[in-house]
Length: 400
Image 1: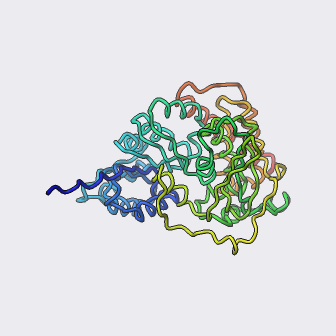
Image 2: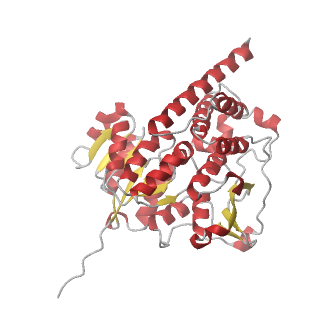
């Protein structure tokens, strides 16, 4: 009598495991079988070494990396005796991307996630993409790398996952538009005068989602939706004029696809990041996920309104970046990061963030194209430097 071999565990590496996306990913993996179902070749975090160590031990990760090079000794000591290899700094992040894996969850926030994700792509891994900046800053390079590597690109943002789920592959010729839904954030009903005095703590209080401070403030300014517009263009091969945004406060409809016959297909679900994460991990099958089931009688209503681009100019900046092309996406993102850090530090007001991004984009509108990743990094550095100089100049004018 022969015994059937147990199925091989699926290998999933996680970049950014200590953030909200990473924690939710590990929660989904635990629900779907944990160590019996999944092998974790690599796992990475930033400053929360205690959590990174717990996650590495719980998953039996092969390689644990902190992005902070100064924390290597601490991480190595905490993992002593576990058999888990420790690493630190940018080169170790890239090594984590190189580790042989079936799927890489790209959850590092910012342009720091680009190089390790490209390393995994080169190895042929499928990519569950939660990092907007990879496509915003390096969309053409990124999609070309996916085509060469042969892996699949599976979106993890709830909006792009929704589109992915309802965009019928054999009907791409009939797609007229996609409609990204936006909660509107905590300031959707505020006047510009009210928004001008808002602090970072208030801006970070998202009404529907539990996210980090930077992502939450991006939602409040709708810069997150601006990045998602650019991301959608690259993910789905769309023209800028095919990408729409609608404010939907309940965050139940995650996004929609409109077809040439007038049909609009939508994906609905409770506002829970584990929907999109679970779909990407389990694709092409649907798994039994530990998420709330919708009670339509209790919902009663779903509201929609057009976004106000006077109060939320980030959306217009995204269209400008798409129309200009080249490295304008990287410039928009780099300037936005510098402005966001200045706002968090209390050096500029909430509404000034968009003004600084617009001024930086105009100053660096020279038609440059990205021929490699170094061009993207250079544009990011230059955009941050220009934005910082504009911020400093604003401070001088305000105090003079």
